[in-house]
Image (cartoon, rainbow, N blue to C red; front, side):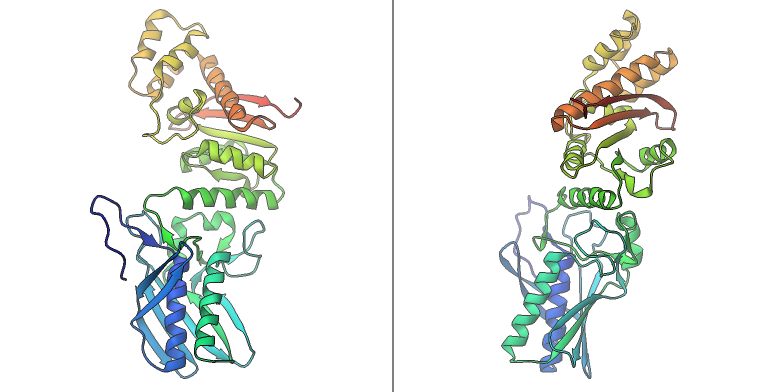
Length: 369
């Protein structure tokens, strides 16, 4: 794949599955029309630039042609990096352009996603890119016959296990995604988009109470705590606490339960809504103040202030039977969450140790104000 020269100090930009699918479709359709094997395909991306993709496995067999390209996600830690994205184009008696997913492209089984239930998980922007590019080529060669396009990802079903597709109700493979055509290295956009979709799926399935967690371990504890809630109600928000809370409110969720551990929730309690380890340090003076309000003595308060981690503070409180500390800390999380979104929801927070010991819980109902 050819790309523009990059500054050595910058991270390498990659390309979306949608861009790859469009390029391989163009190569396959061109080969089908001309009978000539295509080694490259240049397409125009939504971000506003032309990019040339290297094509491999371009073959024509009667009324069908197939072409592929290897997805390059650049320096982004993408589950689909290195995937073979293929397009198969076949002449049809019926006029027009039909598009579907083949092996390794998931199929939508739940409402709330931008693609209707039953259709291949090819998102709206890639669909538009593929259709517009196909129309342009057909017009260029003055072709009036219809075509069927099938996008495949041979290893897509295995790759999908590293994504949230199963939780979102996308079964059998990956999604063909992208709104820009490019992947910004280490961007938050893909993860944030998955959070929005997860909330949409929960909403569409009738969930008005969701459980948001910082990762798989805390989600496991949340599932144990709320066994009566459906799978769709559990959403991994990662570090994006504020973003997830705002999306919950925007989409009309009535009750949000935060489930997590001392490290990240100590930050939430002090009002930090992006809880990545590099975003903000834990404020041990804040934790000392919370401990002081529940009667912790001077010597133990000094240990809290000089602790290395928030988990260490939690261990100190647990060992010395200050269970109210955790309740107060959870209450601070609830208040911070309500402040972040401007109120209007019921927020509850539960704290666990890394090993799954329940520490405390608090609830704030702001729906009656």
